[in-house]
Image (tube, rainbow, N blue to C red; front, side):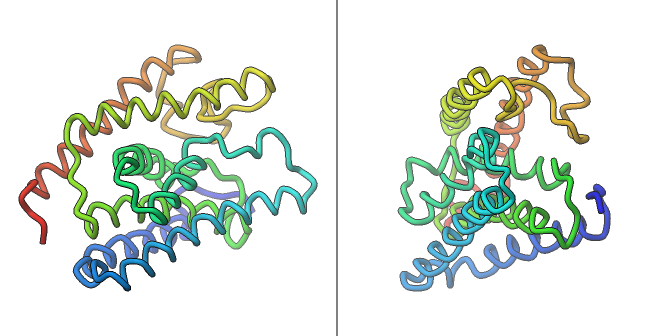
Length: 230
């Protein structure tokens, strides 16, 4: 069966994500206790790493591993960086994971670039990975009390362009990959369908990326004032 957007399985995955995010927010004070905090961070990090390892293993088992299997898509990179952040609690990664992780994973959850439906392995991997990325962002926001600034927006956009370098090189060298959708729009339906043809949509994406990051910053600024550390 092919995956259908906003089908029962799609809505169920979104609902599971909302439950996780709500749980992190509601239990934020308990999750700040040192032992609980460590277990929660490590548990979510391991889940993200296992999901990526399982995906790579599936390619090997299916004899389909190739250049396109490299983790150079934005969300694949966010899986790895989110895991590193959770394992180390490195505050220098907060901006990157919160803005880029939230931006990419939210778009992926709402308009999945996914062919396989429930109960295929790819279905579970896709939603576990993307829910985990957003979960890491919610965790640093609610539990670690991260408060972004306007400078954070600019730093996250710098991160985005740095991460795009290996993706663009891989696309150029192979001529077949489409990491971070820099070479062409995805084959399945996505928000990119509303934009201009290549390469002009790349310029439009610059504006969209800044707008989304700024809206995330403004939303947090409005909902969670800097002095609010409850």
